Amino acid sequence: MPKIVDGAARRAELAEAVWRVVRRAGLAHASVRNVAQEAGLSAGSLRHSFPSQTELTVFAMRLVAERIQTRIEAIDVTGDQLRVVERSIAEMLPLDADRLAECQVWLAFSAQSLVDPALRLLSVEMHRLLRQAFTNLVARIAGPDVDRPLEARRLYALVDGLILHTVLHGESPRRARAVVKAHLAALAATSTTPSGTTA
Image (cartoon, rainbow, N blue to C red; front, top):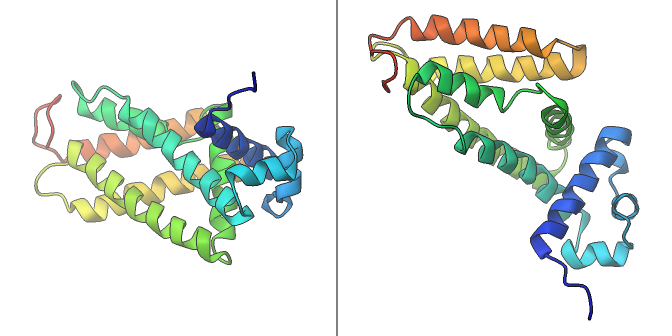
């Protein structure tokens, strides 16, 4: 009998092949031919899943965001809300090999989005979703008198900066977590909401 291939699993495997090529040689080398070779397939087989290189690249970028979102959604949001926010942000930071790979690829895609219209559209969409995510995180720990949109932007910028410093300049993951913890503690100190509840 012919082998049955799970379409979703195959697409994810191809996206991961894109990530490996990007991390090793840069996004400019993530051609259909190179990605197919990385995945152990022919270029024709790859095109059954992704008719164009643009579709493949967009899917690979989106998969990074989806995996981070899946991990965050799996976090237990009951109990100490400061801890919930810390854990959520930890899933975005390059604190281990898998998350480092995601961040490296995400930065490569983000840079390419400046000149690639398809990636630019996705980048704008992801930026909007991230702004809302950080707004929701701030709402969990900030008091009613806090400028929540401003604090969400500050937190978003802080996390972006820590990702850049860790990926590009070797900032230690431990120090990155310490910076986040200190910032969140200062923000939570403005809250009059009892610990363990949502503001």
